[in-house]
Every structure is written in structure tokens, then in C-alpha cells.
Amino acid sequence: MENLSELIGKDLRSFKLETLHEVWSTDELGLRSKAIGAFRNETVARAFAGNEKGSWGAASVYPVTVLTDGINTFAIEDRVINVFNDEAEATKLRQAAIEKLSPADRKILGL
Image 1 (cartoon, rainbow, N blue to C red):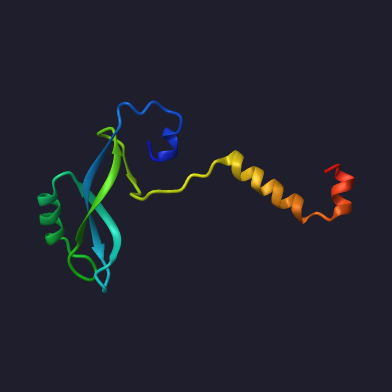
Image 2: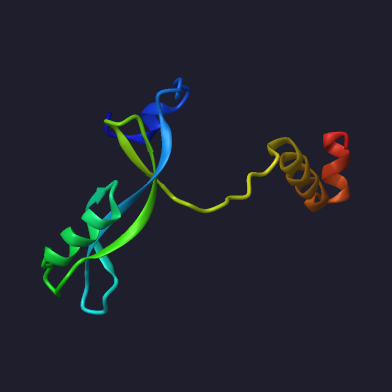
């Protein structure tokens, strides 16, 4: 499995959320530039990062939330998103479109 979208509609009982410790190479400003890999044990991740030399120096370790079944592991962006009510928003959009019509157009459309 190579893509999270392959799990859409699937039974996820074998999967769980975990926090791993991801090692990133850093750029000249010390910012993340490329993910190298992740570890379950933060101490091991930090030791690995201390020995890893990127083009600008040592790597850094960041926590990452993942969905995993122990074999397949997918990073999950840890942020809250606003999910709209499709029907309510469609109703608002229809009403806004109707309000843009001229009285003559509304009459022709029987509105």
C-alpha cells in the first residue's frame, strides 16, 4: 500500500494512531528540508539525528502523528479542519445565485 487514499472505505480496525519521532535534514537556516525516516523511540531518533550529516549539518527530530497497522504507516497532518454542511452551503449558494438574477430572469425561471 503506497497511498492513504487506498484506505478510503476500508475497515481500519487493524490501524491505530501513534506518535513517532521523524528525523529531518535541515537547511542552512536550521529548518526542515527533507524527511529521512522515523523511529518509535525518541532517544534512538535523537542519536541517529546527531550522527546524520546533511548538506548543512546535523538533522533534527520532530514528533509526527501517524496512522499505522505496523507495516503501512501514513503521516497525519495534526490540525483541525472545518467541515461544512454540504446541503446548508449549497442552499446558501443557490440563494446567492438567485439574488444575482434580474427580476425578468427570475420571472422567466418561475422564481
